[in-house]
Length: 111
Length: 111
Image 1 (spheres, rainbow over the protein chains, first blue to last red):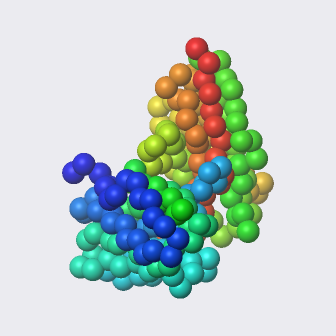
Image 2: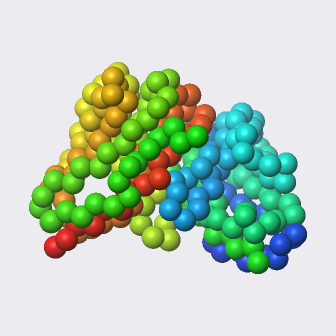
């Protein structure tokens, strides 16, 4: 297995557009996490899946954000009606138990 | 609220000397702590972890110390090498469902 992959690596979009990111976790990992990271900050938790069930969602996550993990494999994170404040690095991580393995991230720029 | 804090944004150390990175937390329910290293344009990479039932964990040149009464943990790197230059994040969790990260410390190891 080559690790956690994310697609796309970079996304530039205009304010108001919808964007969708994909994460493919390490195949045997049943836990999947999404984070957002801005400059000078650590990763900020967004949401957590165990298999296909979304078990945790940050209170900071607005209704414009939605995540899915159909069939408990890959996951998608959608942001509707993007705003300039959504510009950040979006990180995905997976784990079996214990430590998380991160993907390279998707850098979103909203113009 | 920032439940995990890294108060030193940066640290410079001579090659071969010890690097000590510090982390404080506020939530006494945290029972599992991790350190990650991050290079530019990559996702964080897991380094070492410690459970709250221990006060020390070693892995090669890396040792993590946990002081539960002070709600403090530290990462020691001995000897420091130029390849250790990166941003280091500490993280903590109480459930494994949500991880809280510090803001990071940028370590520079001077040859």
